[in-house]
Length: 133
Image (cartoon, rainbow, N blue to C red; front, top):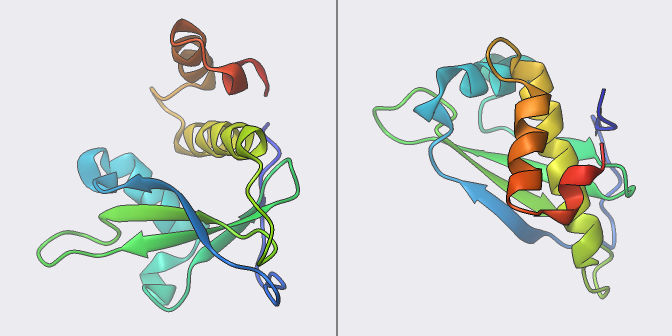
């Protein structure tokens, strides 16, 4: 299992948001939409607030869910790192954390979606973070 922890009320004083990943069509595969709805109670919370997770590096990430007229919610997602306000992002940590987030999502979706397939794709593209997990 990946090392992603859902965080209900992260302390964000002195933090900033830095956009690190955008997926504008979560609904392309409905099982991903359903995963986020279940994991973050989006059927009741909706746009009220982002979902927050803590990744292996210790960084908290805000998952901002996007709605579009005529599409089931959520239709997209933006992922923001929340580093200290004046600190630069550690790109290697962000890459590893994003890979861990992808593994966590694939594990959560399940079915025909397998972490082993994700890892094999990462190795094929020679992604450094694909070897960690």
